[in-house]
Length: 349
Image (cartoon, rainbow, N blue to C red; front, side, top):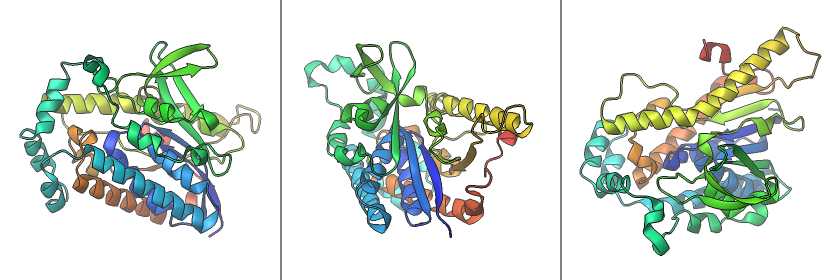
């Protein structure tokens, strides 16, 4: 197959980002796919950094293998740092243990710790505060993450003071920028970074509040029309949440999908304007949207698995990502560069 250039938009969702790990692992098998740019938020930013660090090292097969190794290393570190649940054997035995996992959540330390932490602020720990992600992020190869070689890389974070999105790129993608993109304010202290635009030191929270992931950096003319979104947070959930945990899960899903849906609605409007020839030719980019997701798998997982993943859950998510990417390639590979595989008009109908 002829080479096809794409952009990747990687959504955040805590440890559920292991699904994106699987998607990227499968896409790296295809030497006809060239990744031109990556936009990532939170876990998507971590995945994007690992992917970029590998692809920047070499072209062709060597670069793809380096990217795969970097992703494997990243998630091995996440597993070692966050696996403190007691239900690992359940995840391994049951492929979709929704009810069982939720039952175990009620009787594990993670459940009580999570509810107790809601009464505290990350600032209450005083000098003993540690961001557990810092150890992982600081060991990434930033000379490659920030390299001019390989795909362009964009990271999103939310400015706490003004509520606006900030996009980090190039040399701005530092360990602090990645920590800011993944900074859930009820778990971590805001990450402070100098802003050359405002001339002041700004505090940042998770980029998911304002861009999950941000698509607009990928609209630049040097990038291809195709944007492949790897979606983690389910867009739809049947039934009415009734328990506190279910209500919180759905609130998180809705809030972390809002910015993405807003950008997709704008793209849908732009494509309609272009199709109706209301603008001069090439006055606006005709973006082609593709989506890789597995809502059934995501709906089967509990909210707590985003912050306290088991080895079994991470492995299952990686496999689900590989399978979802495989389905996409089987059904839609021929559409890349020609037409979108997502019907936005139907999505917003």
